[in-house]
Length: 184
Image (tube, rainbow, N blue to C red):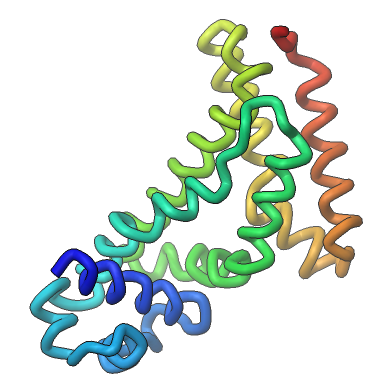
């Protein structure tokens, strides 16, 4: 049963990458998961339950893929770009629906919390030695520099290549880190 739930949550994630939330149907999810609509309903109840399934099954996988050894800035940016190039447009589409569809809140909140957590882990070398108030400000700045909206501005709005966008994000991160006292 757990494997079926995971397959359904991953099928919902695939639909999410391609469609607006209100366009996703239980039939689409069931077909991709190779189960019946009745099974989707029995396991998750409906689209709100699929959001909870996404948060439970898919979000931790995304977080794990984006986490690197603390201090490896190039790897951190590389992993972010791997994620953004694959799912950035879907994330932006989801964020565009946030005010209109409060049901998306658990997914969006999990994404924000996950990104913040990843920044804390990936940049711990610079962040951990700081006093708590400064630590939060540093995380805020790094979250903004590495956010999906930053990726969108560079890649979609400005039309930068992946390498150009990575270089710009790296310059932003380096500027922030230069103002912090690294350890080791």
